[in-house]
Image 1 (tube, rainbow, N blue to C red):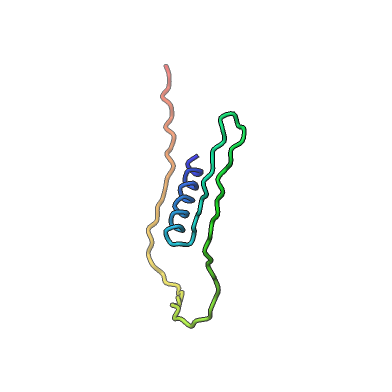
Image 2 (tube, rainbow, N blue to C red):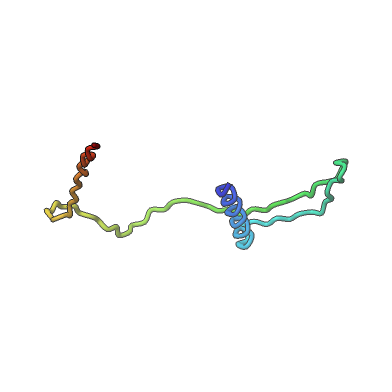
Length: 93
């Protein structure tokens, strides 16, 4: 349930951001709700203009750090675990 609410919230945030950046424009014409008897009515018409985003690649020469590996002997901590020895049950007299 939380996942569904998170997805709905994220979708709402994305729509608000797209509208604020001008990438999404929603125009809604007036309409009428259906009657209680479910007889007739007209749903509003919606027209959405969506911006475009272009993606591509270019070749550039950049500096990239390199990593070299070498073996060294160092002291590392060790942990030894000894299992508890079961204590014999006292004799019943």
